[in-house]
Length: 174
Image (tube, rainbow, N blue to C red; front, side, top):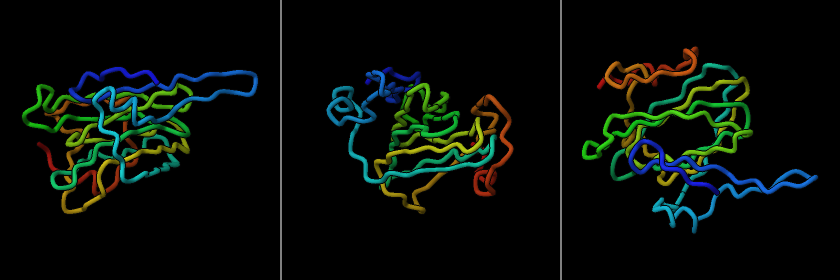
C-alpha cells in the first residue's frame, strides 16, 4: 500500500499496489500494521456499504462528536465517487478546509477521513457503490452536519448534485 498525506492534517490518501499476472492481480486493501506505522488508527467497529443508482447523488456532509466520533476508511467498489472531507476540529491548523478526491475501482485509491471531519461523497457514474470501515458506532444524537454548498466552505464539486436527501439539504450553514 502507498500512503500519501492528504492536504488536511491527519487525513490520508491510500493507494493499492497491485501485483499482477495473467490471472489478474492481488492487492492489499487494509493492513493494521501499515496503518499504525503511519499513525493512523486501525480499530474499526463497523463496515458500511452504500449504493446510489443515479449520477449526481450527494450523501453528506456528516460527522459525529464525542462520545462517538467516527473516523472512516473509504473506497469505491463500483462506479465512481467524488469523496469530500472537511476538517471540523477548531484547534486544527486546517480547520474548515476541505479536500476532495475521485475514488474508483480502477484508480485503486482509498481515503482515510479522521474523526471530527465532515464527510460526504457525490456519485460520478450510475450504479456507484462504496464500502467504508468506521471507527465508531453510529449514534444519532452525536451526529452533526453541514451543507455542502455552505459559502463559508467554498466546496467546488466536479458536477452539480442532482439528488440530495431532505436531511442533507436541511443541515445549517456555519
